[in-house]
Amino acid sequence: MASTQDGVDEDSLYPIAVLIDELRNEDVQLRLNSIRKLSTIALALGCERTRKELIPFLTDTIDDEDEVLHALAEQLGDKGFIHLVGGQEYAHCLLAPLENLAMVEETFVRDKAVESLRNLVSSHATKDLQDHYIPLIKRLTTAEWFTSRTSACGLYSVVYQKVSQQTQEELRMHLKNLCQDDTPMVRRAAAGKIGEIAKVMDKEHVKGDLIPLFSALAEDDQDSVRLLVISACVSIAYILDKSEAEQLLMPVLTSKCKDKSWRVRYMVTDKFEELQTSIGPVLTKKDLVPAFSNLLKDAEAEVRAAAASKIKVFCENLPEEGRAEIILQQFYPCIQVIYLFITKYIFISKNKNKI
Image 1 (tube, rainbow, N blue to C red):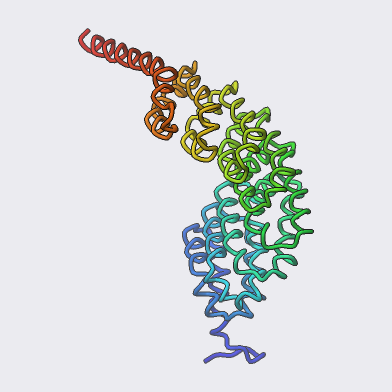
Image 2: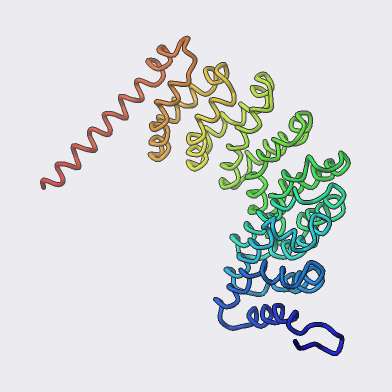
């Protein structure tokens, strides 16, 4: 068995040499295969050399094809890889390469990096979260490039309940900055996660800190941002009592039913069953019934079609008392119009075929 002058077994150096060689190979498939062997290579190297040699090497390996970077993000997020770096005590060493991957331009690479970072939270001790994970979130949140800030939005909910109250306050402040970011892509990412964040916050902070951000996003000038707050409505409604929901949520929700963008109205329609369940029968009867009736008569065909597909479930979930009256007065005229339209469309289509 060959040895170097330092007494290190040359055979033990072979795995890392193969990895480096294949990662630099012009053949993408070879590089991809090498990345997929990371666990085997790390096992051969041992925990210490994996931490000191392999992880730093991977941290610098972000100038590659998106497919390779995606595979790297996936491998590093595997909880089994934590044992290969020495266990929970050293789990934080996996954050550096994933942080770099969370900054890249390609969305599906960033998303996988964020998913892996989320997976690793449970493998960190509280002190390591405070010392390593929170600084990572802050760096991503305040980074110059919007790609980093969009990635940061996906990390708040998984760590919020695991840190001190002082750190939670800092996270709320940073979240506010993300929701008010100048870049629409960042605001869109924040809007998409605000419901998830609401679930881990105390009710007091949901009402005092989160709902003002939610309301502002609901009035954003980008419809791609506004439509994402609809899902947050469902999550927040479960947290608030009915009087709070009526005061804080329903004005936003009813305004989105009349939004100038048909895409936003379509999203409201798509979430109607969940909204109906979350706000309860009283507010459904008071606010959702007239809103749903209007959506059945919407000027946009896609919205009308989406609402029509929800009629059965919506009516079944209405409170029994007054259900028949609501259906006959509010929905039956709309159903008649839809039925006549469909009948006319079928008749015209058949006649065209004959011609």
